[in-house]
Image (cartoon, rainbow, N blue to C red):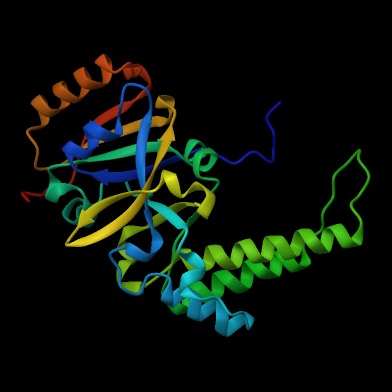
Length: 258
């Protein structure tokens, strides 16, 4: 019998270029990079979410409170013209579909982004209302004490407020339909942090490993030589031990010349 509380699995898509694709889909596992939240493309990252949460909840989150948060971006849209232009090497890349369950199991936390102040405020109020007024019922076992319930709700509140700060984005990025997976890397695990140079900035990141079975789809960019690219990708996956019968490899349907 299926567990009614199990999170439904679906695919989330990560746009990238072919060189990165080779590095991501390795023989032993799938490797993604999670970038430090303080070094993302949008200069308002974190600041908007922190300001909204502090204003509505009278909290005192600071930018430095998130210095150990590392995240990877995905989209629910597998074949987006704008995403090809911005993140898919101007159509010369691929969109990698991955199991949402596998992403959640690896990162621990992931959530759909909210866009703009109004959207974030609505999402924040609705979810906090559910947390504050929720009823915990577990049939067949003793019910938790009032103190335990209160502690659980306070913890859930704190986690959700932190998540809201990370997931709130400027309205201009709404087209991305982004879901973010994130992980906290405490000081005792700093040895896992690596660095790369991006636009003359040193950017910290960590590598996140998923099982090869997490790969569900692979969409070939609209400006690539489709036939030869498909053949080479399939050969790479086969040599690296991926089960091609379980991966939906297809071509972009976006009319785009790059």
